[in-house]
Amino acid sequence: MTSAPIPPRKELSPRARLVLGLLFFALGGASLWLYGGRAEREQVELQGAAMGTTWSVKLADPGLDAAAQRAAADAIAERLERVDRLMSTWKPDSELSRFNAHEGTDSFALSPETYAVLEIAQRVAEESGGAFDVTVGPLVDAWGFGSEGRREPPAGPVLRALRERTGWRKLALGPLGRTVRKSRPDVRVDLSAVAKGYAVDLVARGLESAGRERFLLEVGGELRASGERPGGGAWRVAIEAPDAPADARRVHRVVELRDVSMATSGDYRNYYERDGRRLSHTIDPRTGHPIEHRLASVSVIHPEAAWADAWATALDVLGPEEGYSLAASKGLPAYFLVRDAALPSMDGAPSGGTGASGEASFTVRMTREFEPYLAQDAPAPAPAGIGSRP
Image (cartoon, rainbow, N blue to C red; front, side, top):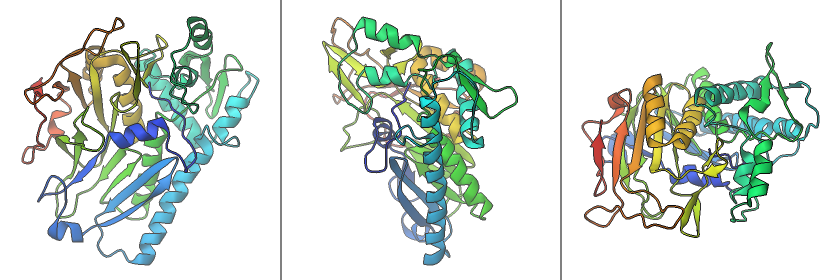
């Protein structure tokens, strides 16, 4: 799973770079790329930086004056900073850092926010059979995707030792709430695969409580659409075509969102190659190794961004078959983009799999719950070789 730590504002983490690479484009009626015309004039856009990444919100409120805009931006920043103060692994005085440094196995009291995020994480861990695991950070670091950035696979004995101190079952939430225990002192928790989604939920609730009911909010790639876009109708958002160059991103498919959140997880922006193997930043907690299946990305829609965030990571780990089966059984709206050719295997076999124009080809697989969100009147131009499978 993705679990690169949330860094200070001055530097983007691997997770932040990934979700920025999994770019969500805000779409309008006149064009796939711009709102344009009257719709553009009927919205206010605010943006900033927090939690080691960026945030933006489009408000369908043209009457918002400069003072009100500053107040809204300050309120958003304050909520994001609170999440960072509680859940950052880069700040030694954060609540999560203090828990990680705690050398005992006794109960540790948590804030309501951190406890709520851990509850979501543990639920998804259990329901995914351990594919989601907030203790996987040491394995992510060992494979070269942590703060040190040393991109070398770990030796076998090192990997075995690290696996002894990871595993979602090594955390126990208090039965009466707001406490957590670890089964051994060296267990470390990293919430970055769910905290940004929770931050979206927290900011969205703040906007709604302030009377802002029509907005498109994004924090580090995690998304919440509320009410209608300028000009009416659901907010239009695009899923990026995987494997397009970072400087030439392309829209794969447009979706329409209203009063829901969406998160995307994928392996195509953050990886390195060693001895013919493509090593993804997404680590399978069940094996301790990077994923090596054909799933390029998966997008999940959920009423809450924290759940969408966690489930997108879990399904990404599980892959195109196991992940699809689980999403379908749970009724999750999920959209899978699967490479038509396998990645290079451990013996360095070539991957192939290109469309008529030489671009990588993909097969779409989605749960039936995702289908109603597809924009019917403005399909995005699909890359060559992309097909569809029910």
